[in-house]
Image (cartoon, rainbow, N blue to C red):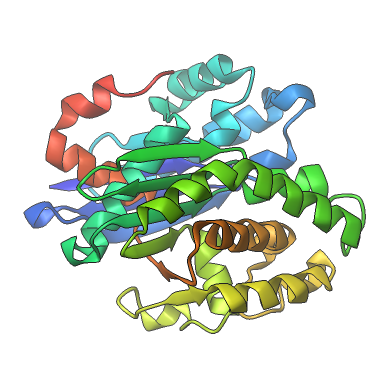
Length: 316
């Protein structure tokens, strides 16, 4: 069976076309379209007509690409930037009517559950009790569990883009006082989730998302060209040093560092602070970096629970 997933995030629309023989999603084609929706959000978080039109056009191109690769109607979803928009209903209707794609909205806790499923399948049962951290543009997802699904899952307003806009947009490079204020906010938001992870004492802790992949590379992990099966980790001490390194540079120069892409350079410092604080409050010295995340979790859940799950699980 060939399936496709369209992921409408804060920075890009991503497409994954995968073959699913034996219940394992193996990608045959990937593509992305830059949107930068987060930079176009208006007062109160509304997307507005211009950003909505860009989203419609990108989703339509992704759907046409999926069809050319022989995939049926894509599983299309949007995360925090659309979920939190006050004009969400209008945005979803525009995508449905003009791109002819039913774009679903995922609650943050469900994002955490699906990502946990993907990580569990990638890491295997030998990973034991498993803790997950997923840094997105708008939110941070945290989960812990011993089985296929997490025992608890939470979504916090600690996305790297959101925090950059709220705390680090005044000067470039940011002032020490602004970095300190950001660290205090992250500690406050993560206090309870970190205490829960510390109490559960996971056997394995995992970070997923492009943010963790890039930070791991900055901290010395193997580059992406070595493939997904190379073991990658990020150490808390190395991440603390990376915060100092990133904080001393203007955003334009961070993109010259190993692993840090130009589009994510501006929010890389906030991502590093979130990752380091999560590890510290949870009592973790290292995190394994997993290449599977939310998109793979959706494919796996669809394969394991059937099409009815996709039809009944989301709002919007």
